[in-house]
Length: 150
Image 1: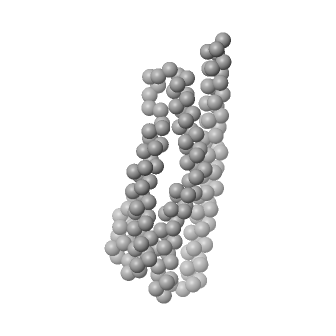
Image 2: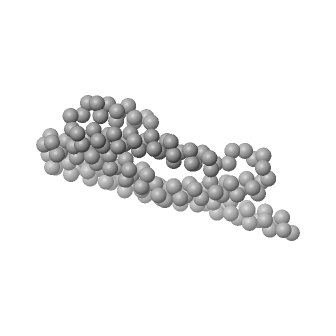
Image 3: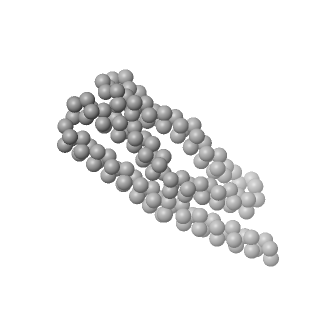
């Protein structure tokens, strides 16, 4: 939501129709993300430990699996959805003849490199942060189930 005023001002001030459409698309994506994706994570995260520890670990396991799933699909949510809006914002001045082809290609190359870097960063986060935690949680659940059955 930090960028919301910037994109709202862009809708108001930009003389390029495609740039206005792109900014509006990004604002719609922000609202969708805050209204639907973030609450899904909040609901899945275990709040308290006032339940049996094995049940708490099961909830924690589900939360980590959801994070891994979202991390693997993040390029669609972080890259493609707002990326389409950014692409439209960049393309607007070019189509109106206000930007040279060389400048457009330079901006687009930085744009695509940023999306690719974001993709690899999110893969790294899933691999280094969430997968080891899930592995340890699964091992702990297995140990606790074995002790419970003994």
